[in-house]
Image 1 (tube, one colour):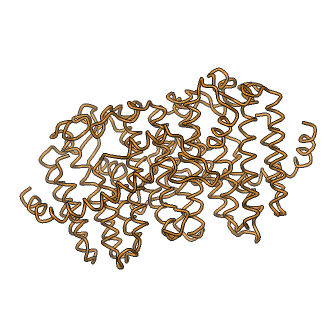
Image 2: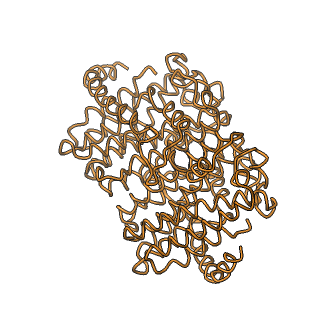
Image 3: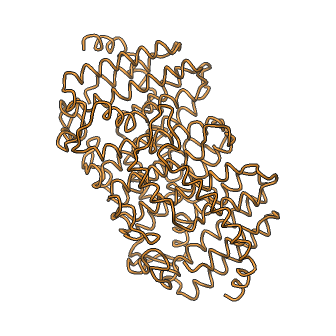
Length: 318
Length: 318
């Protein structure tokens, strides 16, 4: 703990200043793009207001925005010329957040986790009804791919295609949705550590790692950098879940902004239930060190934001 | 009716022979692509078997496959050289069917239409449970975009990007999901004919028209052809829904493969409730004529399949 707190302190100023400016961009972009008239079809149809209201409720004014920050940090790490790929990276940053937001909306529904509180607010189905929550989640997933495919020339066609492919694979049956299905099937069952890791690599790891790789693909990384960033994303993705499991038992609901102790109550397998609290904390710190070593292997100079984000993931209080 | 039945008869042989060969391609492609190991991630994760089983159940062995046939027919209409764009068109054909299939899975769920019968089989949530149905729908949407972005060179990057953009807009809040939200809000309310048309243009029209345009974009259509195909797709999309409403009151459940009379029972506004049965039938025939006129305006030679599909949509018995 001492070591990583020290490393956290040395990065603290950098990360805070950097995050504030990047989050400002992301929030304004989401405000603009999650709107009834943001992407009119050729036929000129607008999205219905009630659906858009639920989509905005699910996305705006909430969340740590970790995935968008990973996209932007990874893009900046590989960026050679200022400005190149920035529009693509901002769109990718918003797209991964839309996928994350849709997954929370669906995950909170009565047939899944049946959660009523999220980010300190009533969940989408509590506020808007189940049917609208279902459709809002569906529409958010589609909107993510809309954002990646602007109809002007602001993002190169090949980049659009790559980003769509990465996002689809991170979100789908061999990624996030697949991990949720394993999670669902695992309630009340004993899992080995490797099974638990596999579940989380899909459920949360795939989109976190995907965020890093999508950010990198907005630039033109060499093979060494890309491999190292994949390793970084894998370590951070796993660490995120280990820390989530730790916080589920150590933090209270008001700090978390969601119902604490939920996983333990639901008899869901977690790192804490499997390896105990202290070993889980040590594992999170080991993953932090792995992520920093991956950045050193990348050969990239500008990795401070990625390093600081990994530190934040492991040493966060909520 | 006499006129269109005659036109149906003159197209019957062409459409049947053509459909059999195209459906064979589509079914084999779906069998291959909706599978646990069809698109392994770089990290080598496979989709969990239970989720894939539900996805396959939702997609395989059922449905008229109208949207895939529209994709392939539109591609053939604009195709200049044999073979060019065929891989893209087959992927697009499967992708639109996956979006359609996911929408049915979610639409059938208890919080939406609460339907227990679909294509003569128990609906996905009845067979696999609500949570798995929700996730299977989510994963099918992601898989549609995976299919459009193969990681080899089989589809040009710019084509991948265009197809993803068209599909996202057809499926999203200003397309299919938006139309479903309007549908949801309209139960028990009186709608004008223009409001009903707007709802259906989003709910079913956007993806049907999107199928036509995606097929065309696998080739290289000129502006005149593309505009005419948009008009064709619009007329066919609207006709499809008018005929659906007619069949909901004139056909029985075993012919439809789903619960007949459902919309009327649910007090949903339909063309039949708004304009009566006979006027609805006349409207469907008028839309068929509009679609054929659009094909004549396209300047394309090879539009027989598109013409026959429009006829089939209007004159089908289920």
